[in-house]
Image 1 (cartoon, rainbow, N blue to C red):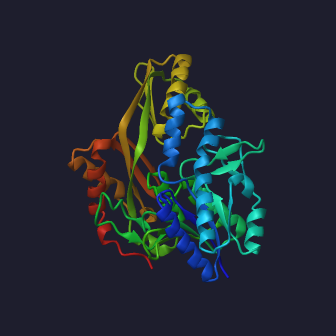
Image 2: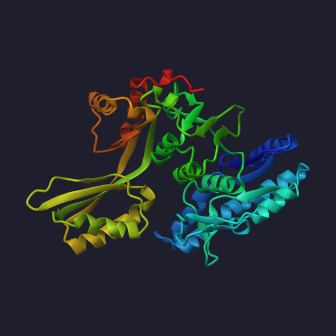
Image 3: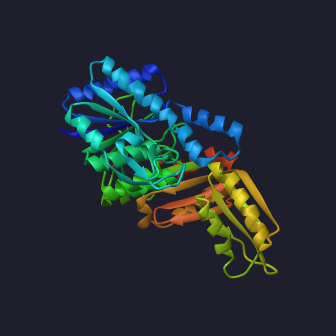
Length: 409
């Protein structure tokens, strides 16, 4: 009898009818002699609605109170799913992050899991119950509610799968797997049968919304088998696994994009040793995630420093940079929000040359200006104007022949 952790996202539980649909799937799995642990997100757009309420009160809501507010969305869903299962004759019980024993650090809105008790989940399984767990949330050592960041229900599910030594973790969403590009932009995009943890991590961190990037790191570290599936259609989905040599057959596996980017620039920074530390140490202390960083060539002992952050972090980043600007006697702080990041991802880049050059030529031929560039062993990212995103994704997908990709078996 296998143990499967299933996670259902906001669109999968967005209405009562959809909740009934996933309950039927869960009931069928249990009937086939599988032990099931269910993790659910808040109903579609509920977290955004709660965030908007908080911002009607404050531009920068108190983080502790915000976590308590945002965690309420998943509590509604777990109760509804458990009720639905019981109406179908399936014994189920709902659990909050606190009841499960998901202990985190003290950081609010982006907490990291430190340990999981899961004793009540184990007991529920022993009594043939289906535990329905609230994703996205935990508690710290002071018993304050914490949340795990955007997409945190993925992390809840994968962490539970690791803690319970589950046979696999199934992530159910509104797409039937991981694609070579967003099918809404590129109709010829192909579903991948398999993808490596490394590629999935890069894609998640670069804007693909299939899985939370921190969840992929956790899965890789604990060797949790992930399968990404659709909650609306049947199909094998995409399996996320360890890399193997066949995956290097193609230089590029996918094109991703991220519109949730903003560029913050400090103008007129003194070009002196240690200035970067004075800029970015306060940013780190504010728990702001920085992606790309560029420092211009200094002139007249002055330089400009630019970096990208998620748009949600712009108010805090600007507040920090205004303070830093005064301390280091920089001229001013500028913010550019109409940008996006377009990226190529593939473990095959390790053994194929010329990928970056080809990407830059494609952009240049279409008159798309590249503002910033970032690379790793298996990815190349460019920051461009947001208005060019769809064109860039389509062109790159075609240039690297991803519509002709043969799925790895």
